[in-house]
Each structure stands twice: as C-alpha cells, then as structure tokens.
Length: 413
Image (tube, rainbow, N blue to C red):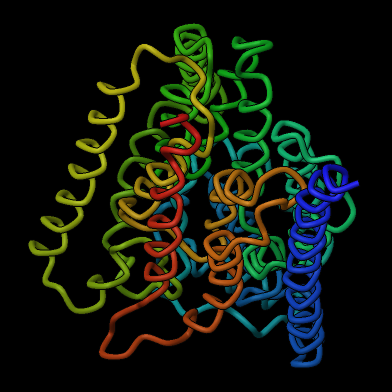
C-alpha cells in the first residue's frame, strides 16, 4: 500500500500542474479575446465604416492603387506623387467622396504589374473596387494563417483564427486594403511548400516583390533557414523573379521599371511624414537629417546582415531549422527595414506562433504571454510620437528578446 501511494503521489502532482497550466492558458486567451472584441466594438462605434470606402482610411490604399492604375492606363507615371494625388482627387470627386489622405501620404511603391492587374477596376466605383480588394486580401490572409496552423502542428482552428482576425494588425491591413495580405499569403504558402515542393515555394515567394522593403528580407529568411531544400527554393525564386520582370516588360514596358525604382526611393524619402512606422527607423525618421537617417538605416541593415552571417556560420550545416530557432532574426530583419508599418507586423505571425507552441501550449509561460499581449497593446503606440519619436519598434524589440532566449531550446542546446 505504501509503495502504491508513493507511485500515485507524483502522478497526482503532475496532473495538478497540468490543470494549472491549462487554466493559465484559458485565462490568457479569454482575457485577450475580450480585449479584442472590445477593441473591435470601439473601432466600429467610432464610425470606421460609417461613410463607406474613401481615400483616407476605409479602403484608402485601394483608392491609391486604383488611382495609380488609372494614371498608368492613361500613360502617366503612377509614382509621381503629385500626378497620383490629382488623379485620386479627381476620381473621388466624381463620386462625391471628400475624404482623401494628405498629399504627402498619397504615394505608392508597389511594382507596376500590380497596377496593370488592377486596370479592370479603373472604370468601377470606389466602393466596388475597395470591397473587391478587401475581400481578396481578407481571404488571402485567412488562408495563409490556416496553412501556418497546419505547418506548425496546431489542431485548433476556430479560436486561433478568431484571435488572428481580430488582432489590430490584421484588421487594419484589411480595412485599409493594403497589399501586405498578399505578401503574407505568398510567404505562408512558400513556407508550407518549402520542403515538399521547393519549385512552387520559390515561385510563391515572389509575392515579396509586392512590398520589397519588408517582404524580401522575410523571403531571404525562408530560403536560408526555413527551407530544407534551400538551393532549389533559391533557384526557383530567381527564375520566377526573372519571369516577373519579363512579364512587367511585356505588360507595362521598361520605363515602368525605372519609374518603380525611382518611386521606391521617393517613398523612402517621404517616410518622414508617414504614421505608424514599426521598424527602428520610426525612432528617428521624423527628426534626423537626411544624411544621418541614411547612415542609421545602413547601420541597422548591416547589423542584420552580420547577425544573419553569424547564424549561417553556426548553423549552415543544417537545412530546415525550426522557426523558433531563427524567430529573433526574423524580427531583426523586420526592424532593420527602411520602413515597415504597423499592419506589416502581420509578417511576424509565424515566429510568434512558433513561440506560443502548438495550440498555444506555451501560453502558460510568461515569455509567450508577454509577447502575445505586447503584440496587441502596441496598438496604443500607433498615434503616439513624443518629440517625433515613433515607439512601435519597442514592443517588437522586447518580443525579439523573448524569441532569442527561446532559440537554444529549439536547437536542443
């Protein structure tokens, strides 16, 4: 009897610990869901959808994209911010839409092929165009997330999807009809296919060209560290990129590529007036002189390159590293981008999910809970820029630290 009691006692202690962990997970998720629903309710109550799509907020990026398509269709340069603003202003005035973003914000840096693809929408009303774009982005975003759930071994679907769709980064990306949803979906598909079909994975990674400053570094991470067949993925990405360039030449001409390159440079220079910058550049773009800003941007990119080289040298013999092993480096590249906006943080979904563990099993631990709640509460920093300093990168730095401390566990060291 005594031996039986001694055997049963550890098991009962283990069961109690498991129940405590499950309870902590349920509490963490339940509180977050309440906060998300409350935020969503306030978002709607403030009139976010009241007057329909416009050029300022609801579907605002769709208005810019379609206006750029209108300029290109007429033979103009869509990356000329003055021309783009006049085109959007005229188009919206025809539909009696008076809300338009400030002139300094109305500019695009996406590839010309995107605007060529949107030309069928140029003769449609803004409402129809914006809602069509938002529907496509919403479905793409959700589809990409569901694929990542399966990839990381999550069996739960409804609650994780609900949390993901209600997160401010997801909501605002779809609400403004930003192309980041397509980038996210393309990268998610590439991650899932990286080992099974590297040729298709490389092709889907070209979605990163829709937003090169934030998309290409993440594509690099997938190729170098996530894929178990990196050479084939890299080759496929290169071939698909060449085909992307060829299609651009055939559809919009060589001049459009030159305009695009100049447009991206102009977008980077105009980021000083941009709200909600999540990369490290948000700390200084509003007050640093041009030369100092370029030097700081170069320094952060060089630091990210150096960190990547360090990880590569120490782990190069391994193909297909666990996401958690390089999650901190994933965030480092995002932070090093010349500009990344709040809704671009959706690209950090994969390392954050890896940190939480399958079905959020690590939500009973402080680090993962802290990272998840920082992701939500960073919303409070979107409009706060004391002294011209945007602080959205601070929560990301904290999350990167949590991921860095977890990396050895993923590598078994």
